[in-house]
Image (cartoon, rainbow, N blue to C red; front, side, top):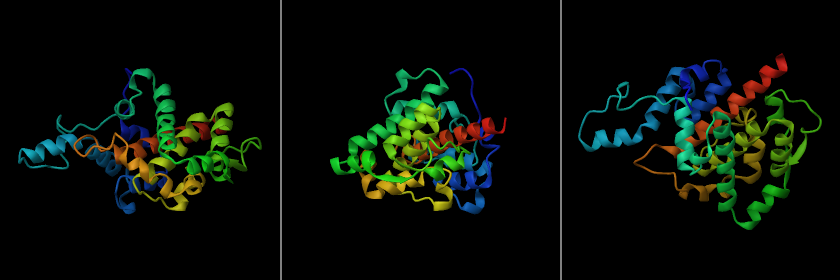
Length: 244
């Protein structure tokens, strides 16, 4: 990918609720849900390997240091890093492919970790999918209402909302995997229904997944952050199309 998008530019148009969701995922106080604070926290998590090295060499860590040792990642850098950790990088050559393949890889990993009963719930148990569609201004009768998690993904793909639905579903998996609980008001723009359907016990096994490394980039926290960015980016795109 040649173009590089600064996170501050990408998050600039987000509303207060979007910023609060990001603040929670970044371990920030909700009262500090500013774009600058969120971007700085992402930089800090992304450079956890550099922080480890600095501490090991007994050098002073200055959190506001924007040196070359701890650069702020671009959106594209986050996508590439996540794809490498998920071992799908060689299959991605465009932002569109990264945004589609990363959520899919997280969903597949979650399903692989589930026991048969948990997987059966994913494919058969129904829930109200309306809040997720309402958040993106999607009113089509063909896709709202009671659905299973699997059918939501299939319908979204056929309707042109595949990335939005997959990223919100994967986010429900990733947040439960590391024990993050978002308030219901925040989830109404994401995938509360899917996350609450399965419940935390179904995802705790993901905590052993291979990309959780103490000395590397902090993907146990960054993966939910990235999935939120992907989902919110596409929700805003859908809303913008509806206003045209």
